[in-house]
Image (cartoon, rainbow, N blue to C red; front, side, top):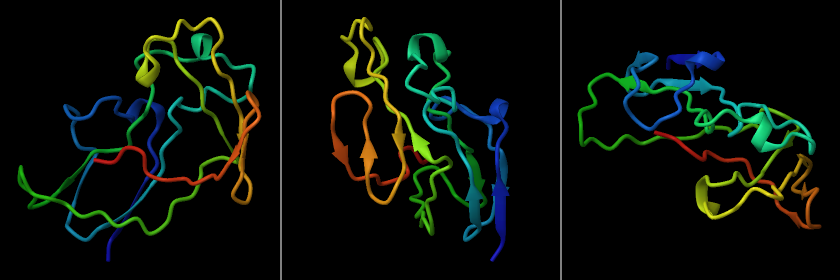
Length: 142
């Protein structure tokens, strides 16, 4: 089985769903070993990094790819099998972005700033005290 490894540079990310040229053609059955950045392109690194000053809109949610699968035609269903998912860093970040996403009515006066150290099954929020399981997974894939 062919294994294709691709770790994109910042300028190789796609920030839209569709309308982007494939980064490579692959045969059906090819294993892809890919790397991608977090939703903020690595710019939120601490609780002091505010989305309003750290992010450049609309360059959030970077996508790795797309890959052109030889022989696939419009309307075909492609099955993807994830062999392994490994977090790229030892922390994660989550924050609300004023007028973006599910909280579009937020004013941005008090953005949520969090840093979540990864550990065995736990996440620590630096905002309101909370603990929850940490489960990396594919958030956008296509």
